[in-house]
Length: 98
Image (cartoon, rainbow, N blue to C red):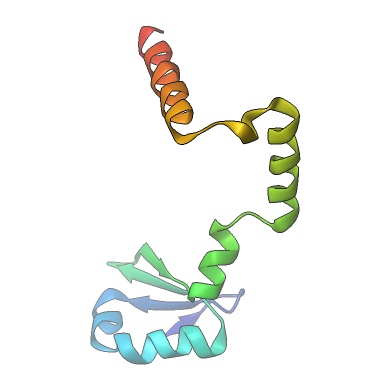
């Protein structure tokens, strides 16, 4: 049903992925591997387990600690949401002028 590359990633044509989505979803979760979906021989999408996605999308705890410490040093940890929105608005306005 699926080919594999050297990184143990499954490669599946889009038509097969559509027809076997439930089974493929289960394999991605159970076997902790990714799935590349191809259409006409070209990679178009990747299916990852939620655990792997979170690892890619979420910063590591050490990074969050460094960001927090920097925020305390800069005093930005005391900003309220309205102040943050104002800073964002001002920054966007400056970028438009450039």
